Length: 324
Ligand code: GDD
Ligand code: MG
Image (cartoon, rainbow, N blue to C red; front, side):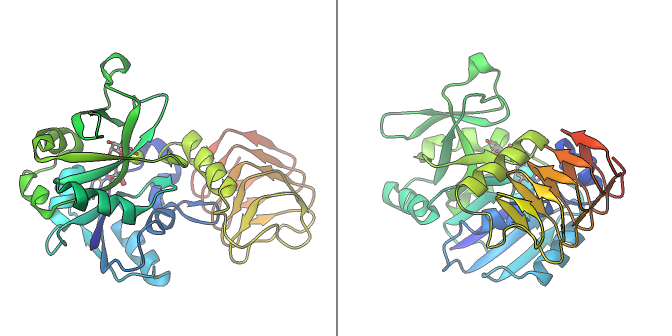
């Protein structure tokens, strides 16, 4: 099987960081969001096709520099085509069936079992479903007793949500769905296509481990906590000379001699935390500098941004080269 991964979209909910970096390359628990999704793919996947758009060149450069275990091909869109248009644009040569992955979700999910769910039911697809309290940001499924999906509503008002089981952004589809997507114009796969395929047999595959969509600042930090708690925070730990219990994921060249850490921190490549500074529950991207005695909590610090000596910042998102 091949996999089609949706990596367009502007990441508006993660601005200002996403003015310079596509959200999929923001590191959480030690590696870019995108790589946590790819990790879910079975080892025998034949090819991964990345449907890119916004900042496609940066994604392309990153995957070349850090090749995943599968052959990867990127198919950029000249203009954003939405999830449907992006699938159609990148769908040439897809396997039948194929995996469809959103690039901003983290999960404990057995995608081989998901693929078996599609093949044993013989339906047009199988969709991983996560149970959430607040369904408003998601696509929500109505389920029959055998977990066949009988209704699908994208981002409904709470009173219109048929259940608490939502599209987890991980699915297996027969190739023919690509022909059902309008050609040559942007479209939403979830709104314009999925509801009209249900009579062909779409089956739910309930996830019972952790799941989240890391597309907003709060959810990104929550995703990082979930990944660390699940032991997916990479091999590293505290950088040499730092104190605290972690978990901390230290990426290449990051230093923090004499600094202290609370739980759940990613120190991006080349980030520097100076002596006496303290960081917790945060993501520091490449080249960030947290100066002496500063305190950073619950924040996402964009590349090369800087927190001045003695400052305390909490719940902030700083763009590239910003000062906090
Ligand atoms: N190629 C391409 N082109 N990809 C796109 C585009 C586009 O124009 N717009 C968005 N994407 C990608 C995003 O990068 C993301 O991986 C995926 O498509 C979904 O887009 P989001 O913007 O993150 O959508 P969402 O989170 O509001 O909703 C989607 O994900 C939920 C689960 O996290 C839907 O699929 C919901 O049904 C689902 O519940
Ligand atoms: Mg999303």
